[in-house]
Image (cartoon, rainbow, N blue to C red):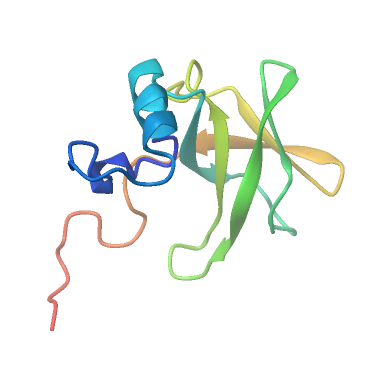
Length: 120
């Protein structure tokens, strides 16, 4: 649910599965976190994982992975933040090597977001 993959869970399946009760409870409650993609204003270092995500002067989340997107020429990060702030447009910072860098949520894919490239 928090990673946005709950559409692949067969909640209505008659057969039980391990964790079904917990999954249903979390679905009803809405989950506490959301996975978001960020563009980071980093110049000479990129995230690798476990960096803190700051919002409004406090650590509110953490980076799960990221790095430099060579084709897009941007530093990107994936991370979890509380759902209450998950759709905020700005105000995020990601700490890299002890220095905070501005970050903003990237909601569309960086590469071919409009499906303009021919596929094989």
